[in-house]
Every structure is written in C-alpha cells, then in structure tokens.
Length: 159
Image: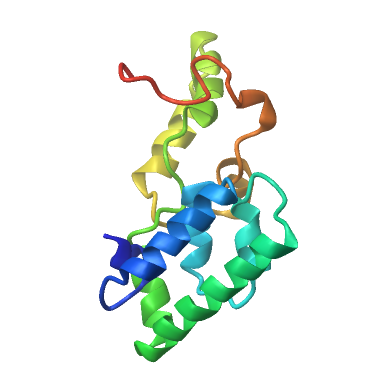
C-alpha cells in the first residue's frame, strides 16, 4: 500500500518510516498531503498546504532531505507523468470528513438537500480533480473551530 501511495516500484521501509515520523511531527492532513505529493512536487512549499502548524527550519530541512530522496527514487523509476497518474488513482482528492458533512445535515434538517446532492456527486468520484469552486470548499484543512468539537472533530466507533 505504501509503495503505491508513494509511487514507488517497491516498498522502502526506511523512506516510509521517516515519512510517517515527519507527518506526525508536522501535524499533517494525510488526504491533502498525499494528493499534493501525487503531483510529484519539487519544493516543500507545495506540501505545506497540508500542514496544520508552521514548521521550524530544522523540520523543513528534514522534509527537504526526505523529499529529495523520494524524488530520486521516483525519477529513477521511469516516466514521472505515469507515476503521478498512478499515485492519483490511489490518493483521493477528497475523503469523507464529518466537519464537511455537518453543514449538509443542518441544511437537510431545514428541507434544503442541495449540499447532500453536491456531496453525493463529489464522493461519487473521489479520485477525480475537483472543479475550482468545489476544491475551495472540500480540499482544505479542517477549520480551527472544528477541532475537538463533539460530533464533527472525529468519528467515534459508532459512526
């Protein structure tokens, strides 16, 4: 699974383990991160759209080193465009997040099902690129007001 998400021909435990540590240290949104990574970025700045907190110079240096090693593996593997396309087939552009869904529940309770229908369309094709107006709404970090908010921060076992 990790090899496919990272566009690698074979699993690289050291590269994956280092990435997982960096993801945790940077408090990263995994969906946004892996989708941005699917574009095979050359610069860390592209990936920072998935970071919830600013990173230090030291952490940026670790990221830059990891990104360089990963890109070397990717470019040595062949056609970079084919690799990016393959990564986009396993790294969705959008995933179900309760904080995105809650407004649809609220509107539906008032008889307005427009957001429910929009979400049905978006989630019918989670690996497709989103049109700009939907991307702005669904491809973003969780707003601060939803952190630790009961019922929308994270799923419980009964969700």
